[in-house]
Length: 443
Image (tube, rainbow, N blue to C red):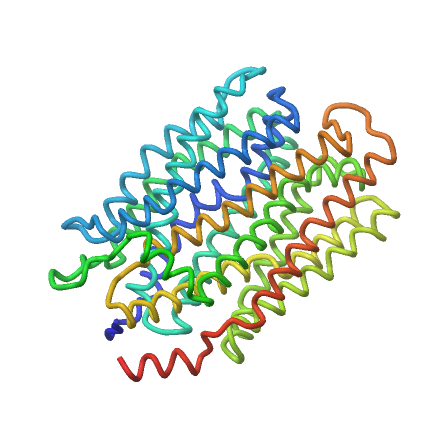
């Protein structure tokens, strides 16, 4: 049932959002830099790297519901999520050290499998509790969007810094790709304890009341949850948004170099893509307040799908500025889906809590995390397999015109189809502002 909750201050909201710093360091940079780094500089090749990242992401899906179950059923005297966030810090930091600083090439597949597995476990322990925190600290329909907006602003600001970092390190200090990746790892390792500590110090995390009904995680309860049309729509949207965003990140550097002839400044262009999304976040959030969350989400998905077509004619010109124009226009839709989908999931959780009396935010957000990882797995694994096995693309060799054309089609086609599908699914989302207001008035 819904209870009155005090709206968090801006300081508290920013403390919560500060965990977006390490989350940004383990998010898209994995696809933008780490996957190509192991495929090229560390000698694994595109097909092997894509297969490893895809398979481990699917294995990682098994840990998401486990983490959700732990969040909902294993609180501590510190609260529901605090102890899980604190435990994630050393696990993720150790795995990051070995993953971002692997030594000299070549490395074997088993090395990558082991440390990437540990890395993903740490991400799950950080990501799922952090999301599940929101329904207990955000007070209403639009305040949930506010909390996720601040987190995405912090995450995107961090991401922009990381995207600019390789170019800065290369041009000012002469760092090669190995050294650039190592600096990213150091940033992640240092930011983890600082941001998690700040959030745990300033943001309330009340433990569940003693008389609160315990959550049921039987197969029947999970099947009942999936009969909720709002839930499966949110999960399906997240899968396709994950495909679109991670697909772009994983292929961008290859596309910039081989299709547009941009190498050293490619991270700067990708940074501009995210700057556009960063600037547009308040616009899409404002639109959702003036209308509905799902209508704003549908609009941003269709915008993104349409604007990716710009890469095709601009590729005929090639060079820095055509790539920059395409990146800026298509980037206007980046970021907003993260805010809106997670806010929509909080609404789903509140309605289900009112119906059943059970707190299942951990389970539901673990499903959402698993949905994004599913999309991201497809977005790295399938394109890399297509590029390596069908298109014939080889990152460190000469590629003829047909291969480069296949790279461009794959780069444009993946987000085009994914964003369009997500927008279509969002059209019939049932939890509107009026439904939520009625739920609150009856609680």
